[in-house]
Image 1: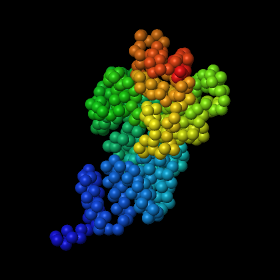
Image 2 (image 1 turned 45 degrees about the horizontal axis):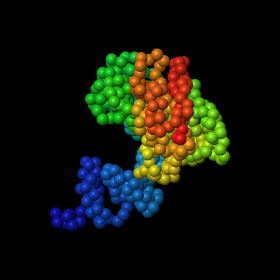
Image 3 (image 1 turned 120 degrees about the vertical axis):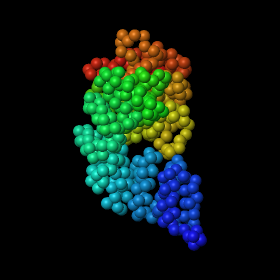
Image 4 (image 1 turned 180 degrees about the vertical axis):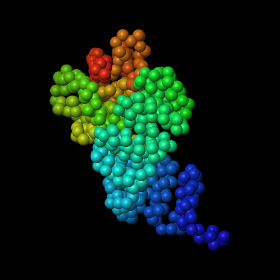
Length: 491
């Protein structure tokens, strides 16, 4: 015993540290890791343990720094590269993460985990066809891995082959019927394809199989609501809320059903999840719906031609919720710029970046950007929207994810320089709706606003309302979606 205490086995310590991290015993793991480092020279295994411990403690940058040092010492170590790729992905640094993942695959071609990480990153970088190839190889090496199945289906859907994605998920569910995340992914795909009956059937099959999951019940309620089965949808939403009373995605779905009052904006995780799965067909879908807002913005700016022609480019321009860059593209030939885009979805930002019209693109909530004066944790300063006052702010289809406007409009006003302008669009209630509230959350998770409320909120924020006119936003089921175009000025 004395000998063991004086010279503990590094392998035993390594296993003990990993077990402690898994059990959440982080302080104890830290102490044992310090002992291990005194016993052994620095190496990849110790660095990966240190990174895992830092990550478990919420210190992402410390975890990456541990791996940076280890990779400098052992650049040909595949597992180190793979782990750093994963952590860089979490940070949102997709390009360097993809470089590390590609190096990991080159160093260890037989490792399916490296190929899976590379596939996910390629998909997020707008290369879904290459992503599909990588992920199919990963799944062939590990056919029962549910994460690989879900990632492959997402890449197939991003490449436009939603039928293949549905088949991939169906095969995965057949292989592992107890994996509720695969069932949820299949339901979400069916909803995005607007096959609500299929989504309901999947939910009912999952419930017969014994699945109990808040997201599953929430998606079931959403699909039922879209089919007009409001009473059954309310039951599903009620079950979802009981299982996950604080989950933002579930709460927003429930609020949209009318069963939960007081939701004054869509939570960021909800908006991000919606558009991450929608990015690769966003533009084609909107164009097919006769989307008019970018053209309306362009026409509004041309009406302000004397202001725009004051000499040189007018800017900076801040494009809130820029998505794939449709609004920015519509005005990119006018004397405005530089343009800076902000969006919650990395996939949407990748599409915007491909257009080459933005000086910077920031992955963030619009309120965070409007209220921030400098870099935030986990992002680089070079990716930040500029802190200086803007000459023009665009908000195309942003207000539909906000009910109350008493935070958004004052923050935008404060970000504009005197003489600057804000262009915004919003949806309104159907004509003839009985005396709607100032704003309402519809069953599709989008807010409508009453015109007099938009005017009052803008004037209360300090704006002068130059234009507030009814305009059709787009068409759904061949019916116009009513809305407003507003041009606001900071005096």
